[in-house]
Length: 241
Image (cartoon, rainbow, N blue to C red; front, side, top):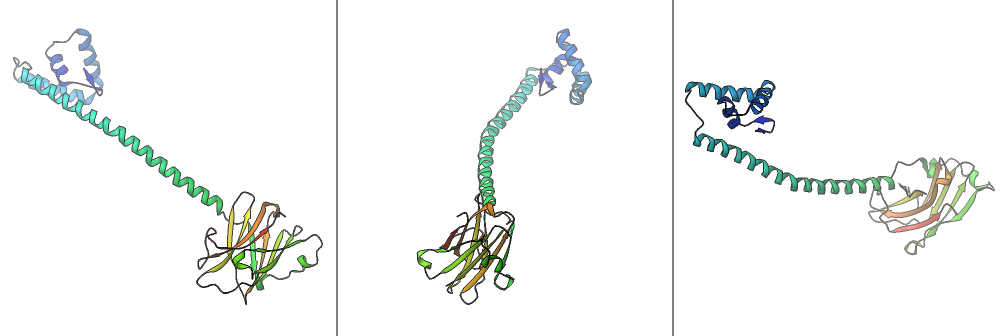
């Protein structure tokens, strides 16, 4: 009998004793020629049997061999039983990991690296390309109720692919910062802290493709800003309008 690609000791003893059929004996002989483990086992029993040519596998020896095989079979069955629930648990773990990974992917999609440049206050060299250009679209910001003292304008210049925002009424907020968000048509969102000077701020966006963006809004965030808006929201501008 071949078990796990090896011949049982009982069969090897029977082979040495000439108790097998010719076909079985030939099969064992072919196997032993290529199997080092069975060669060693066969040599052991051959040496043992040669010590006493009258030695026959006793009932006790056969029982011992059978018990050994039974124990081996039982252990492997237990391993199989353990592997099945472990495989199920592994499947659950994989699913949980995938869920968290998907959440991270979605977060990355929501906060990708910006494809624009931002300038604020004194870094804005000139606003004449906005003020004196007939192709520029302008609209006031829409403050939320709790920030109705806030007012400002947005200018959108399709020629230079720029957006200029000017705001006033940015009152001091304790242990928080104002942040501005620009959102594209795919829902990706990027935020920049607003540098407030004497209650006002000017922010210039220079983008690669103005048509990719649709919304600009502001919010109050923890000190240093946030990766995603947490609110409360301060104002809203529809860039696509």
